[in-house]
Structure formats: C-alpha cells, structure tokens
Length: 483
Ligand code: DMJ
Image (cartoon, rainbow, N blue to C red; front, side, top):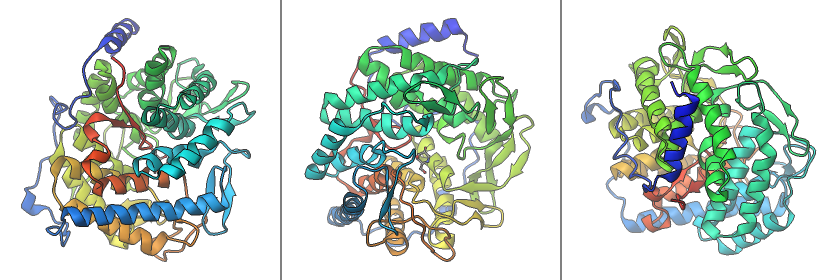
C-alpha cells in the first residue's frame, strides 16, 4: 500500500528524475507475474494472407489512402459542422455535447492534422481554437471525457507546435476541472460545472478516477510547474488502488463519497480499461515508482484471474473482484486496447496472442461488434462505434514485432471501414455489424485515434517515434520535455 508519506517522497523523486522515457517493450517485463501459458507460434490460428508483399512503396500508398480518407471526413466536418463538437455524417448536421460547443472535434483532431502534414487545415483549426474557444461556460461536463479529449488534445498540440495559447487554454481548463476532486475520498466526481466548480455524480468507476494522471493532469503540472494537478490526480489513482480486493482486483463501480464498491465485476473493459493503461504509462512517462509497483501487481493479478485461455484463443473476460470466479466470457471493442498495453509492457508474445483473438472478433462479422461472447463467438452487442482500440493494438504490436502480418490486418480494417462506414459527408458508426445499418454519429475519436493509429501503422518512422512519446488514452502523444 502507498502511504501519504511515501507518496510525497516518491512524488519528489519522480519530479527530480532525469531519466528519459524508457524504450517501451524493453524494460517493463513483469517480475513475479504469471503469464498465461503460451501456445507456440505455429499454433496461432488467425490466417492473415498476403503478408509478404509489404514493400515501402505499398506502405506509402496505404498511408496516402488513409490520409485521403481523413481529409474526406475532415472536409465533411469543415462543411457541415465547423466550430461544433461533432459532425452528424448522415443528416449532415452537427451535435454539441452540452448545448454549446467546446470544439471537441477540432481539439481532438488537431495533432492528427499536424502529424499527417495537413498544414493548411491544422493552421486554420489551431487559429479557431486559440481565438474562439472559451471554457467560461455554465455547463456540467464529464470530467473524464473532457480531460482525455480536450486537455490531452491541447497539451499534445502545444508540444507539437509550441503555440503557448494552447497551453494557456489547457491550464484554464485544468483549473476549472480541479473541483471535481473535492470529494471526501479525493476520488473525482463524474461531472463538474466549468463556471461554478460545483460537482455531480458520486457513482463512478476506476477508469474515470484513475485515468486523469498521465498526459493530462500530470503533464499540466510538469509544463506549468504547479504540482497541484499531479498531486490530486495521483491521490485519486492511489485511492482506487488501495481499495483493491484481497486478491488484488478492482470492480466496475465505486462511490466517491463512501469509498465503497457498488459493482464487483472485474475486467479490462470500458469503465476499468484506462486505469490499468495509466498505471503503466505513468510509470513510463513520469518515472513514477508507485505506478510501477501498482502496475506490476495489477498485471500479475489480471493474468492470474482475468485472462482466459479459451478454445477460441486468449481473452481477458469478467470475474468477481472478491472471489476471482469467472462471471462472463465477454470481450469487446473497448477491450481490444489491451494488446497495446501488453506490448508496451514488454510482453509481446501475450500481446500477439490476444491481438489474434481481437482479429477473430473483427472478422467473424466483417467488422467488430461492440461486445462478443468468446465462448460462442456470437455478438452480445451488435453496434460498431468507429472505435480505434483494435487498430491501436495492431500499431503497437507491429512496432515491436516488425511482422508484416499486422500491416495486412490493418488493410482488413481499412477496407471494412471504407466499405461499410463511409458516407458522402464523412464516416458513420454502425447500428449493427450484421446488417451494416449506419447511424448518424461520428465521434471525435475517429479523427483523434482511429485514423491516427491506422495512418501511423504505415507512415514512415520519422512521422513519430513511439519510443519518444507516450500516448494518452485518446491517442494524444506526449513528450517528456521536462527534467
Ligand atoms: C476513447 O474516447 C478513448 O480511447 C477511451 O479510452 C475509450 N473510448 C474511446 C474510444 O473507443
């Protein structure tokens, strides 16, 4: 357990650390963890044809195609929804999450525009944000979503462009979000009013409590020299960790006022996912030893209880956090981020096995369903929300393995997206991967994550070196520019 004193001492140590971001995949092998027994490579069952023919020219051609599709969707946003949170890709309208725009798509998309070399569009978007975006609004926002999309996007684009107006906006937003942490336990409320600082929503989950540390509040502290952001976010993360069960697992729902679990279902899916992701990434980005220890304990326990070596492959399912008893054989589109985390932690073989399972989830319907029962290989939720996680994992696993079969997997995703989700104004989520019926939604993470990871899979290494950045959970890359 982490006491307040050791926490303070370790925070000082982390702040004064001069270490560079360690080479991901090389130094984070888990001590004492019990990995799931590996089948040999020859037993990997997922066939990915045509993986030998990936020349540099073919990769460049793919990158250009993905960039063109990004531009197609961006033009739709530019024409029908400019200045609003999201494009509605079927009705050609727009949506603002809180009745007034926070420029969610522009902020979320800006670093992808920059990385793709879409300079004219990036400059126009940056000016829109810097001149017109204001957080002085009497609205209750979801702390988690605004932190990962907006705070993360502003900080990342500040680091990429050096435009100090973006850092000023990030700091203004960070200050307005801070009251969320004013609960009896220090774990944040779900909603905070940007103008008044009043809070709502005591029932939350580990992802929404534990995800605020890394690229967002921690980096804001490092870039502004104000420790308060790191300290509050770190305390919240430790509060969740300290409430783990005797076997070391966290549940799905917790009350920030009582500190009691209200749902003991344990998994790596939505609601818990980025809690684990940030334990590892906060260790890498900040050299935070508490996070290293918490990550190592957590991954060992996940591999012991949550990993499931089923007939259909390796999965991470659902168990009860107290007993460790299997509760469901369910995996989904959100869970598909986990191979990326395993690869970054140094466990490439397990990442490859899990990614093979994810690929089966994608190909069983021709595009991935939101939820899958891996015992029956039937969908439990048929929608597809244009999510990035499987592509994110494919990018990481390709980066660390260099195996062209992952480029072929990327081609499968891209072809399915173009075939099933493209509209004349952009890209649309699907109501059903059985019927491929579209719905009028294109979330900002399609620009921030889905197309960014797909592009980076094929783009020249000089576009961005994964060893020099840590991506937040919304794919905003952060560099350790501080000592
Ligand atoms: C994104 O907002 C982030 O990746 C988050 O961690 C999970 N959900 C979406 C994408 O699916």
